[in-house]
Amino acid sequence: MNASSVSARAQEAPRGSRASDSLALRLAALKAFTTARWRARTLRTRADIARFQTGRLAELTGHASSRFGYYRPFRDRSFEDWPVVDKAVVTEHFDQMNVFGIPASQVRAMLAAGQERGDGFVVGQSTGTSGNRGYYVISDRERFVWLGTILAKTLPDALWRQHRVALALPGLSSLYRSAGAGSRIQLGFFDLALGVDAWANQLDRFAPDTLVAPPKVLRLLAERGRLHAQNIFSGAEVLDPLDRAAIEQATGRRVREIYMATEGLFGVSCRHGTLHLAEDVVHFGWEPPLVGSRLSAPIVTDFTRRSQALIRYRMNDLMELDPAPCACGSPLQAVRQIAGRADDILMLETPHAREVMITPDVFRNAIVDAHPGVRDFRVTQTGPSSLEICLEANASMDMEAAVRAKLAERLAPFGVAPGITVRRGLSVPFDHKLRRVRRAAS
View 1 (cartoon, rainbow, N blue to C red):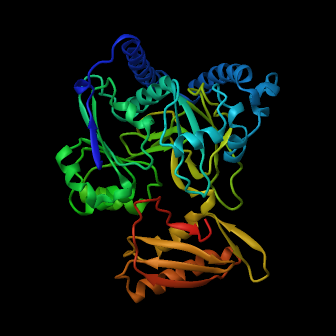
View 2 (view 1 turned 90 degrees about the vertical axis):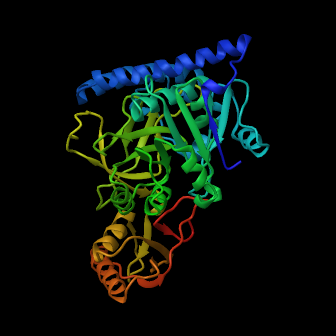
View 3 (view 1 turned 135 degrees about the horizontal axis):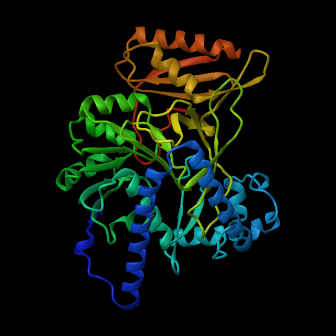
């Protein structure tokens, strides 16, 4: 099925205990919505956020040390002394990090059998962009808490106004599909793996007022004159300034971001277009910035998760925070840029065979700054000291020369002078995430 829409009013209400459960879940979503809106009004300063998070961390660590076997040894330690974990650690100790005692192997088996639901919970997995998948288990109640929170941040008028929301996101699971149950939101789901052409006409007929999709999809629709939604949200991939400019120029509307991963909801843009971290539901710690860079990786702790621990989890994203306050007045931390993933850091050799780490923003900025005609590009590290640059099919020789020169200029301070091959012709993948800067092996 290419697309489907779910309307709460069109569904027959479940009966007996199912009706009671359904009502409880709807109330959980409503409570999360109103709580998120209340916090937006009452958390007015950074000090307010710090006090709030201190209380939530105390509650969470008490729960975790009593319910999750992995964290029992840390019961009497301060939060700062709890271990920082990553995807590999979570996968290895998965059964000790969820209240159901489910191992990662059982999640894999369920998903391989096409089964997402268990008894009161849902399992899922990441898209595996970095080569290995992450897994999650979440209760039904937590799904609806997620729903209420994200609606409060994206569609704050959802309690009194109906919305038609189109979702074109990878790995659409029960986490997203829960949004159609008992809400004033009518949802349309569109399969990215089929490509935009397979469902563009259905999208037109659905006529959404809100569209959530990766930036490559938004840009394609915008450039074809088929992006008519009033509320445009970019999700699932990094919103590159190139794509933002193309979408906003074609539509005359602002693109907002939803920063969300398998691990949870981490940020939403305000009406000014500034991405704010969701510090009302997540605590953010930070790895030390990379040498010579303002980018660092977040270490996240989700206050809302009780079925599976998400405590001091090191994300793979690289981002730069903005120290300036946003014009919207929110005290939630503003993000200047999400520059990519740690997997996208290139490791180039100097003439003396010393390996140097260079973050993806260095390459992106060099190419975009090289020539005003650059509208898209790819950078792939193909060897220890070699790069392949892909430009659009109609890129001029002047553009190629300018890109080569600017890259050489920006890379010289790192002591590297890689061989650069330039080719023309770009394709946009719809069955996996677009990564403009990457290592060939990743």
